[in-house]
Image 1 (cartoon, rainbow over the protein chains, first blue to last red):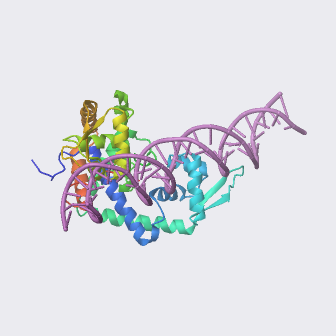
Image 2: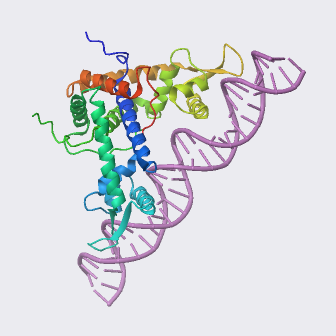
Image 3: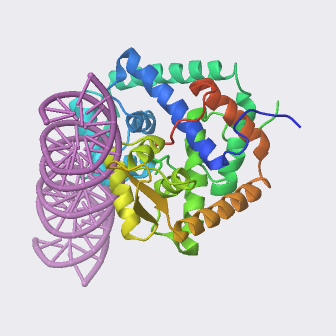
Length: 155
Length: 155
DNA sequence: TCATGTGAGTAAAGCAGCTTTACTCATTCG
DNA sequence: CGAATGAGTAAAGCTGCTTTACTCACATGA
């Protein structure tokens, strides 16, 4: 039998939580170091959700899995700080289109780079391909094959 | 090349978060179904931290990674609902020893069973051994070999 | 033409679960 | 025996959300 260290008796759920906590923590720390200490993970998720042609606040709410009021608050915050703009919606109505500014696109670029650097470093200690494969299987087993649910704060 | 479905382009960090969210959500749902809808994950963690000979509120705070006031509030809550008792500490001082009641030990037993049932079911879709191994490696790479940090709400 | 509905946005209060600040009190040590 | 130590507690503050309730632009159709 292969002995894998002191984590044999640790619950899978606990290990999943720790893994996520540590990887996300390291990611956030590195982003803070390069000048993004003012952005939380949810802001990066919002940028991802808006990166194509933007979206209305209500669409953003659906993609983030929060109420439209919460999405509106996030947009207020990001707008004050210059990461998004509210434009009149091309299809009129009361709608407004929330679009990214160059500052947000720059953040997306940097965050993507940091994420891939981190993954490359982890590949020195773990089989990241296998990890990714098994995680995908677990996600599909619990959620089904139809797309991915929004990632919400865990617990 | 092996094609593993539509998750190829998904960030590892995102996948980790989704995996944790879905597994913890399923665990919590099943516990609620068997009568524990009133207990959050942090309560289960507290039970784990107290299950030997109990601990003081300050020790509990360290093990949970929160302030001693937060630990005190959690203990207040659990005490009102009959899951823990505050006893005078055998070594005196101002200390009090927080110990589990049989109700809490019963919860620990049921939660452990649910966790292992869930893991067994996941083993039908994924290689849980590999997942556990790679997660352990990631955790050690980011935290070191000295024990495991407290699991805190993510993000 | 205009009432009535529909859907997006917004305003404000409420709430959970923490932290921060500030204290009380029993014990110990110089 | 007076001050330091360390556990516990009280109360306010804060963040990031939800809930409740509203406004307003446009669409529909009698």
